[in-house]
Image (cartoon, rainbow, N blue to C red; front, side, top):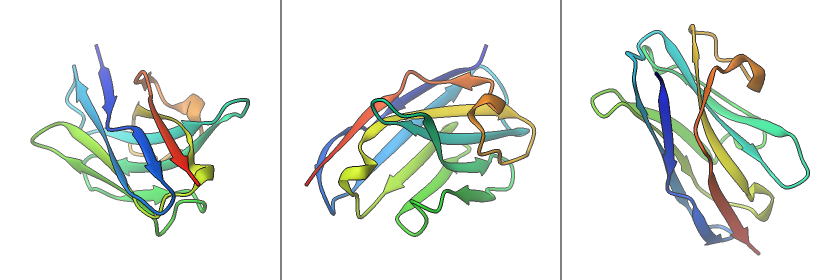
Length: 124
C-alpha cells in the first residue's frame, strides 16, 4: 500500500523560500513518476512539478519554472520541492502524488496515490 506524507509547509513572506518534503513508502518506486500539485481555495487542483523517479527527469508548470525545483533522494524515498522567490499567488495546499509509469503527467486524475497535503501561505 502506497503511503505519501508531506511536510514543510508554513507561513512565509513574499520573496522567501520553503522546502516541502514527501516521504513515500509501501512500494519500490523506480517505475513511478512523482508529482506536486496545489489547490487554492475555490480553485481546481493544479500541476506544479513532476519527476521521474528512476532518471530524475523533471517537468514544471510555467508559473513556477525558474523558481521551484523538484528533486528526489532515492536512499530516503523522499521527493522534495524547493520553492524560492515565493509570491502571494503561490498560497495553496500542496499535495504530493504518485503514479505508476514513467510519463510525467500534468493531469491530476492520472495519479493514483495522494498525500494529505500541506498548507503554504505567502504573505505580501
